Amino acid sequence: MLDSAANARLAPLGISRAAQVHLNLSPAALVEEALRRNEAPSPTMGP
Amino acid sequence: MADTGVFTGRSPKDRFVVKDANTADSVWWGDINIPFEADKFDQLHAKMVKYLEDKEIYVRDAYAGANPDYELKLRVVNELAWHNLFCYNMFLRPAEGADTSWTPDFSIICAPGFEADPAVDGTRQKNFAILNFTKKMILIGGTGYAGEMKKGIFGVLNYLLPHQHNTLSMHCSANVGADGDTAVFFGLSGTGKTTLSADPNRGLIGDDEHGWTPDAGIFNFEGGCYAKVIDLSREKEPQIWDAIRFGSIVENTRFIEGTHTVDYANNSVTENTRTAYPINYIDNAIEPSVADAPKNIFFLTADAFGVLPPISKLDKSHAMYHFMSGYTAKVAGTEMGVTEPQTTFSACFGAVFLPLHPTKYAEMLGQKMDENPDVNVWLINTGWTGGSYGTGSRMKLPYTRAMITAALNGELTDVEFTKHPIFGVEVPASVPGVPTEILDPRNTWSNPEEYDRTANSLAEKFVKNFGKYAEYANEEILAGAPKAEVAAGA
Image (tube, chains in turn orange, green):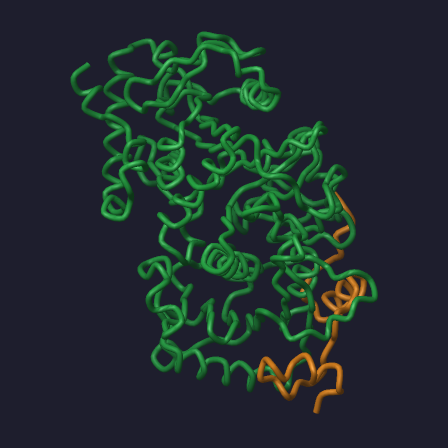
C-alpha cells in the first residue's frame, strides 16, 4: 500500500502499489540512488 | 554518467499515438504518428502498472511551459533514479515549497525494464513510446533513452498549443538582446541551432522547444538543455562545457581510462552522446524563460550542395515554403559507398514531433508574420561554399556569426538585395565583417555553369519533396517554391 501523499499522486495514474515510492527527491538524493542501484558508474563532477 | 542501453537515440518507428474519437480527425496519421488502438494502450498500461508493483519508483512533479497561462502540469513515474534526475533537469521545476499535489495535465510512466510482447500488445517490437491524448498519458517501455520523455511532452504541446490555444509550437532555440529583441533559430540536427543561439552578448531563452502565443510573445517549454557532447571542448562550446557540473547527466560517454575525466572524443557507444542540465547552469540564461515576439527568425540549413546563399532574406511566401520544407543536407557516410550529399527534408524543422499536419504550423507562422509585420525571416546556410561537399569548404563559423549579428543589429536594413534566380530569396550585396564575394554562391564556384546545374537539381528536390504537401498548401505558400525551370533554361 502507498502512503497518502504517494497515493494521491499515483491513483490518477492507476498505480496503487509499489515496493517503495521516492517522491520529488533532490538531485543529490537521486545521484545517491543512481549510484546505490548501480545505474551510473560515477557522479558527474564536471569535465 | 549514465548509459541508455540498447537505444542511444529515439526510436521513431516505435512511437505511436492512440487513435480514438478525440484524435481521429485531428492528428496527421502516417509514418510519423502511427495509430495505436485504445484498448491495446489500456492493456499495456495495466501490464506496466503490474510490472511496477514490486519495484522502487521515482515520482516527479514538474511542469512544461514557462508562461503560466500555457503551462502543462506533469507527473512522471520512473523506474530509474537517473531518469527522474533527467526530468528534474529538463522539465520546469516548481518553486521551493510549492504545493504540487495537483491533478496532472499529462503524465508519463517510463519503465525501461518493461518490454512489450508485440504479438499481443500491438507494438512493432519490445520498445515503445505511446501518446494518449484522451487519457493524457505517455507510456514508455523497453528503452532507456531518456530523450523519449522530453520529446514525448514536446509532441503533446505540439498538439495542444496550436489545436487548443492558437499558439505556434516551435522546434527552435531562442535568445534575446539587451534591448529586448528576440531571435529564434530553427534548424535540424547539425545545422548550428544550439551553437548559434549561444551568444555571450544575448540572454538564452532556450535551446530546443518554444511556443509563440497570440499576445504574450514566446516561452520556453523546458527547464533545461539536452546538448550533444561528442568532441565537446571548452574552446568550441564554453557555455555547455561550464554547465557540466554536479547534477548534470552525461549520457553514453566514457571516462579516460584510470580517471574520472570524461573523454568527449569517445564515440564507442554512439555519436549521439548527450548532457542534460538545468537551464540555470548556463550563465546568461533568462528566467523565467519568456521573451517578446521574435524580431528575427533564422532558418538554419547545412546545405552540403553549396547552392544556397550563406544569408538571404525571405518574404512571407518563401518563409512558409522553407518552413514547411525544413531542408538540410547531410554528408553521406563513406561506408555507404555514396559520395554525394543527401537531402533531408523535415517539415517545420522537426516533422517527427508534429502531431498535426505541417500546413497547420506553416499557416500559423504566416499569421504571426502578418500580426508582426516588422519580423525578419532569414535563411542561413551554415553548410558549404565554393562547391558541393568534396569540392567546396564549410562556411566559416565566424562569418556565419557575423551575418547573424548584422541581421540582429539591423545592419542589413539599408543594404541592397538581389533576388536569387532559382530560389527567389533575397541576397544582400554586403554584410559587415564578411567578404562580399562569398555572399552570392554562384561567384564562389570555379564553374558557374556547374553551380546552375546543381542549383537546378536541388530546386527539383525541393519541388519533389513538397509534392506531398501541395494539395494542402495554399497559393501563398506555393508561391515560395523555387523555380527550377529558370535554371533549366539558363
